[in-house]
Picture 1 (cartoon, one colour):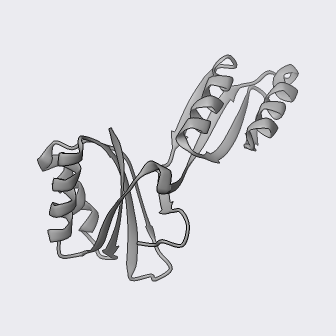
Picture 2 (cartoon, helix red, strand yellow; picture 1 turned 180 degrees about the horizontal axis):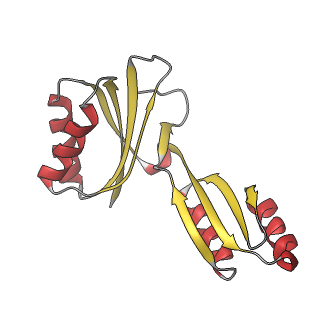
Length: 161
């Protein structure tokens, strides 16, 4: 089962190494990792998507709370989660196919980031399911390269970490 863990940490060198080391020591694989400064420049938010059972998640949360630079840890359930990631996909594109790719981009809410004689690079910010659908639609054109960010997430509604 995938879990999304949101961690507020002091914005210091080495914090990410300590967090990722904790996951490695526990044999807990990280599927996605994103780090960024919050509204307070002294605090960063680390968003980790990892797979494991509920017991493993509970142990990781306890261990994270023991780290000195960690301010707060929360596992956010899927129905309480507003998440996005960014994907850039470069596809083969003959001039005759451009209108088709432009239509796909419009339907999916993607942007065209770059066009060359033989390729088009599309950009989409969405949840994992929409990105998967977008990739499936582009496969028949020949995906040349893909780059994805890690998942960023916030709790829905007025709740906050």
